[in-house]
Image (cartoon, rainbow, N blue to C red; front, side, top):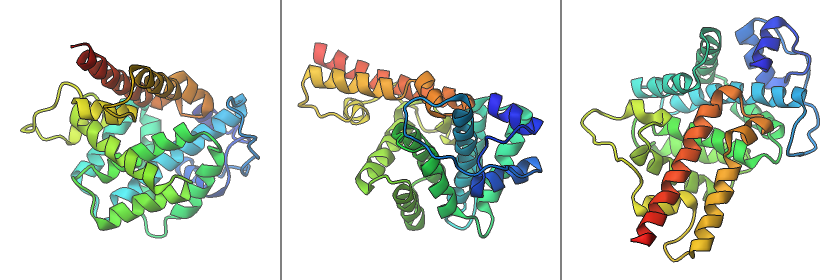
Length: 273
């Protein structure tokens, strides 16, 4: 990956400064010497901007995941398993995996600058809502890793959404989607925390399928198809990478598009019968 190679090679002038740069720099053993550049909100980023956003996304994802895991006072084995599952799905090299683990540990530490990290991530992902939503889904999965989140974890998730400019309504919708995905997406990053006694569904129920697409049972076929195409376009892995999603996370995006397709196929089969 280009941004990682430049970091370890010392050519990191384009990279983030601020709290994200401090976190990543401490992992790599050096500082990152540029602050946040102004974003114009363009859909496509030039190479340097995209690599900076990729570095910021990677750093924030694993450090905030560690903070969420510690929210209830202790980090459970299932929460650790979730982090390891995400790393496995990304097929990180040994060096990147060590960096992700160190970032996770930093997120658990006392004094972790959560608001500063989220504020910087929001500026880096300016107007790239799908990218922010993918980040949030990963954090919500972390909160659900050892069962239903407690009151403090729920407040923390709402706080994270607020700091990223996501409404409480959308935050709860994403939370509902994560619960549904855990039930019908056996290939997702959350598979490892399922117990062996609990049967895994082969696909979404009809109610789950409508929820995933964000439509109602009463929606017309045309409305369902539009929602399907819109979500598929938003979550296309290549498009997300062009917006700054780290290339290692393309598999997570691919899983998301598979879930969207499964939901659409379930609805079309039901309506054809």
